[in-house]
Length: 190
Ligand code: SAM
Image (cartoon, rainbow, N blue to C red; front, side, top):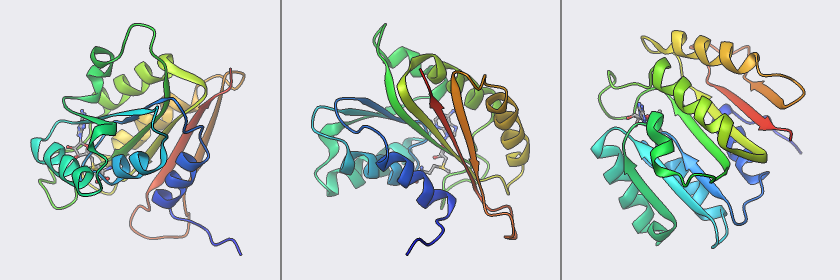
């Protein structure tokens, strides 16, 4: 039986559908580390993860979670904006998959949110760096102040990507109250 998944569960399905061997994976918004942990649990031993956050507490939480599962060696946790991703990549290095969770860190300061300028900058960098069949997964929580503007900015950018080169998907329940999260998936065709 197939039960419909929410946006976050769907994002994990997308991760599992990727080639998880010998690739570079990016968690652009580490937060409490759940996506980083999920990636680390599923990639093979020749792959690596870069995990970004601008909050020290998020980086500490993520490191602790990885240590708990003995997965810390697979991940480089980086206290920096995802807008600076290029500074951490080799010149010709390609990215297999990147994931964003847009919004604020649950259980922390709700004023520290992802914002359109850096989110769009990071997406544009990643679009240039993706492997063939590589994916960018963006889970957008947009019920907070500023969330709608960011969601709209992301959607404007990615919905304009040429169909010949990119598949772009929007996944959302449309009969739920309170801004149900959206999962966007961008896949490079060639
Ligand atoms: N995926 C996370 C998890 O599994 O717990 C939740 C992420 S939370 C919705 C969004 C995170 O993005 C926050 O921790 C916030 O500090 C971080 N963030 C905000 N702006 C950022 C930026 N420019 N670069 C990297 N991280 C950023």
